[in-house]
Image (cartoon, rainbow, N blue to C red; front, side, top):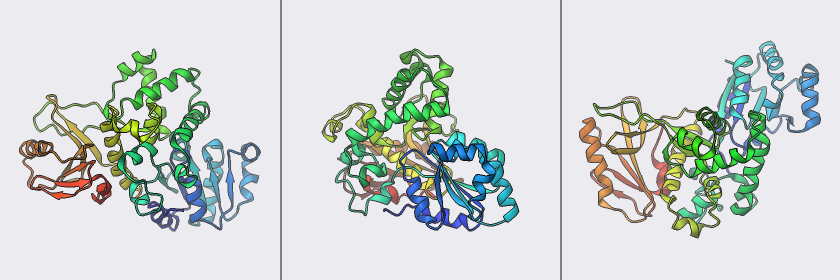
Length: 388
């Protein structure tokens, strides 16, 4: 088992609060992680129909079996438990009693906010980060292999073929999880919608275009994007609000959490196809944005990532908002450094009148360089940008 960066923060908060809540996409390693962190706690999964029925029909008796606490997997399947858990932790006033996990962010947190607010620390576990896997024997050999395989733990743990695993994962998600979040009767249309979203990773979100191509209304497209966000399939990168006296784009960009999932949805069957694919640059950018985001989430922090684009097309791919400073990052998938890539930093520095000149360019090559305008990082060094 690879050590997960989030482990330290979870253990820290389990010594302070009575409930730990861990959400994230299916197969991101939530169950493996909590079992390893809390080996002495009993474990129950509400995916089991008999266990779920017991919890729903007699929640008090169900919880009485676990006086010293328990790990409850897929806890959103029995939200009636939460009020009873509240009563138990308030009465016992003991830290680290209950560990709740769930793969449906919205359903779980909606119930927690009603019953366990102030009593639980909430964390999100995404697939492996590059920082977690790069020093292991499981590490892929090159960037195209990383992008194609993605970073879901099961692919590495069981040595599975991405071409075999991802289609089954997608099908299971559509047929099962989507219906639990919202009873969608247009499953084939929803599957087409996900594929269209994958073809737009790294691009501005255009709900009207997505709706028109799927034959659905604008509000339905908006609702479906929300479902994909709630189940950790994709996230939206918001534009930074600062306009510097320029007209700026105010539409978010769409990114998937995992590039292997994107490749599967796009019908890419091996890494050789990816090498010449017209969306390779977008997929590479999705990887970099995802790694910067994981660095924050794995520390239990909220995202501080944005992008910036004005109406004339000048764009900073990623801005890290450090409060008093905006750190610009440019992302290029090419393997050979091109001098013109650095021009955007001249524009940005003149526009913002920055005194601090720290900036980064992350590219698909292997060398690292120190330039006057920016630090050049190879893709393997993306986690060296300290985003905390």
